[in-house]
Amino acid sequence: MVARARVPVVDAHRLVLEEVLRHGPLTRSDIARRLRMTNARLSQVSTVLLERGLLAEAPQPRPTPAAGAGRPGRPLEVVPSLGLFVGTWLGEAAVTSCLTNLRAEIINTVETRISGHTVAEVTAVISDQVDALRVGHDAARGLGVCLAGQVDPPGIVRRAPFLGWHGVALGPELERATGISVQVDNDLTGLTQAEHWFGVGKDHDQFAVVSLGAGIGLGIVAGDQRIDGPDSGLGLISHVPVSDSGQLCQQGHRGCARAMLSLGCVESALSQGRGRRTSFDDGLALARDGDPVASRVFQDGAAALGRMLALIANIALPRTIVITGEAAGLALDNRDLVERTFDEHRHALAQPVPLVIRTIDRSHWARGAAARAIQQFAFREES
Image (cartoon, rainbow, N blue to C red):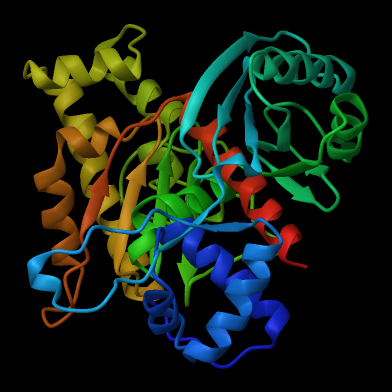
C-alpha cells in the first residue's frame, strides 16, 4: 500500500479507478484508507465514477455474527462490460495475440508464424488476429502491441533489431487497419506493467522484473511508478559484468549478463562444450541427468544470475524480484545456488528480498501488451 499526498480531483478519479481495478472489489472505507483520502472526498470521486459507468456497486456482502451490528458497506468494482482488450507480442518468427478482460485474464489466444517483417505484412497479420479474436465477443476497447526494441509516441518503433526496424510507424498503421486505439511499447515494459497491476506488484510499491530469454531485460517499479526513460528497450542490464569467465557476447564483453544467461549464449556454451549442437531445453534435461558439461554451464549461469540480482537489489532496493522469461528454467533448476550467491553479495543486515521464479511463453508477453492497453484505457477514461 502506498502513501499518497493530496492530489487534484481529476487525478483522484484515476487513483480510485486504478485502485479498484487492481485490488477490488473494495469498500469505500477501504479505498479511502488505502489512498489516504477523506471519506467525504472519496464519496465525491466515487459518485462521479459511478455516474459515468466506470464503477459499479458489488452485491451486498452477507453480514456475519463476528461483524457486529450495522450494515456493511457495498464494495465498489470495475464494470465488467467496460470491454475486452487485445494484446499482441510481435516476435521475430511469430505473432501471438490474446483476448483479455479488464483484469488482463486471458480468454483466448491465437498465433501466426511469419517470415516477412514489412510493416504492411505485420499489420495485416495483427489485423487478422484481432478480427479472429473478436468473433463471438464485443468489440475490443484497445489493442496493445509489444516487441523487443525502443518505441516512441505515438507508436513509432525507433529500433527493433530482431525485426530490422528503424523508425517504423506501427501504431498509426494499426489504428488505421483495426479502427481501435493502439498502444505500442517495449515487451519488458508490458510484462512489468502486467506484474504491477495484476501480478506480484499489486502488493508492492517497489519491485523488479528480470527477464531471461533472447536478451536480458530489467523492469523496475519504485514508489508505485514504473521507472522509464529514453534508453528503455536497450537492454542495458545485459552488459553488466557478472562473471570473470564465460564466453564473449555479441559486443565483445566477456562474462556479462548476456554472455552468461541469454538463450543464444547458453546454447553456444553447451554446444561448444559437448562438441554438438545442444538446445537450451536439451541442456537443462542433460544437467538434471548429471551431464558434467551441461551442469557446469547452468551452474555458472546460476551463480552469475545470483550476482546480477544482488546488484539490482543493492541499488534499486526492491521488495521482491520476479525472474521470468523463456530461459528462467536456469533459475528454477538451480534455485539454491542462485539464492546462495544472491545472499553472499548482500549486506548481512539487509532485509530479505524474495525471489519469484517462473517460466513463461509467448502468451504471457501478449498479456503484458494487453495490460498496457488496459492501463492506457483507464488513464484515458478518467480524463
